[in-house]
Image (cartoon, rainbow, N blue to C red; front, side, top):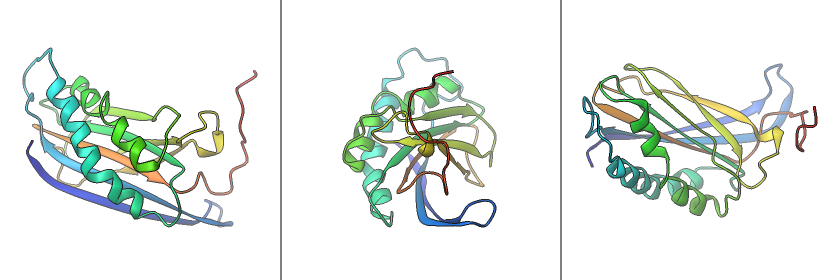
Length: 181
């Protein structure tokens, strides 16, 4: 695996969009920019990318969790694939092996890890979805952290993104429970 660089983005939220104070919420995104071994190729067996996603999760998630101010309550994952690749290659990075090290790092993870993948050019942002790690119906934890790398992905690269947060949205008012309408 050829990792060109890694980044950690730490975001602390102290107010909602209207300026109303909230308990501080820390979000940490860990990103890795890697060479895509399948760029420009239609490949059926993407298991190499499964393994790469799992390895990067093991390398980056513990540090991301340590950067939080409080214990993690939500998480998410995403991939941006350079234009010489295809979206399925991003899916292979975030499924099926990335979840195990993410769950280990947050100390649980009964809920599905929200995810997103897209094919994009250099410097394109991605909305990295967040959801509660254990309560799938915690609407107050449905959130997004938008991230980007100015010089990635190059056409033959993938940007793998993982995030953890120690809170939901600032001043949430939606609640929890299955949808009844």
